[in-house]
Image 1 (cartoon, helix red, strand yellow):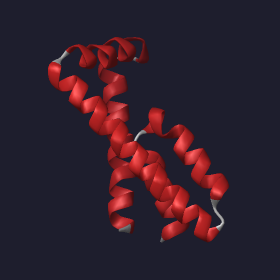
Image 2 (cartoon, helix red, strand yellow):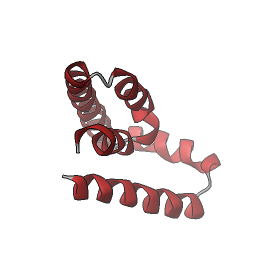
Image 3 (tube, one colour):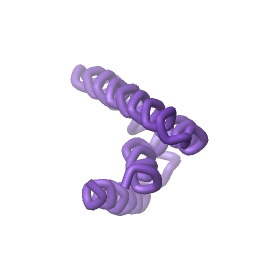
Length: 96
């Protein structure tokens, strides 16, 4: 699992740098909003945010057991911006 979390972190960094080089942040909001206009874009948003809710619940349950609530809340708050990076960092810090 540690390897999987590290792969997520590295993949997130590589894809983020690649995306930044291809389309600077000024274009990111337009591209992100454009996804919503497509039929499958709506499904993507529901699926993505549903997964974030499940990951947030997992982090809160784990944090309640282990006393890592501050880190869990910080990771949950950053998930809409950082996506899978936040739960991967939580995993690397507290579960492994």
